[in-house]
Length: 111
Ligand SMILES: [Zn+2]
Image 1 (tube, protein in one colour):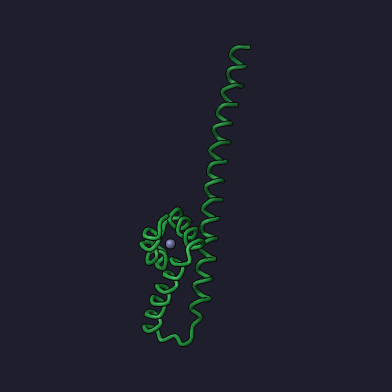
Image 2 (cartoon, rainbow, N blue to C red):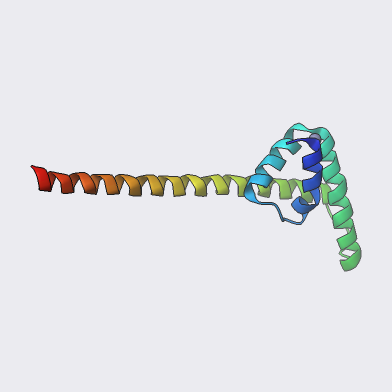
């Protein structure tokens, strides 16, 4: 992912609008690229700051909140992969079950 692509995803990220794959690519980029990480922090602060003005919710740990959001995003990505692996395992097992059933059937027919 290029910086330009990452920048385009900053706002959707803050609004939780990214798909699992976009989220993973975005997190990887943010992890390696201090510039985009900084951009995310600025956008996040502005976004949270504006919402805070709306609700007047007093003091608020913005940096900690972003940290927390990023941690949650990592969890989301790992859940996505676990789900994909599970789905892969299930489809592999069902293909194997079909093959075994067919082999048993052939054995009954031909031996
Ligand atoms: Zn970047």
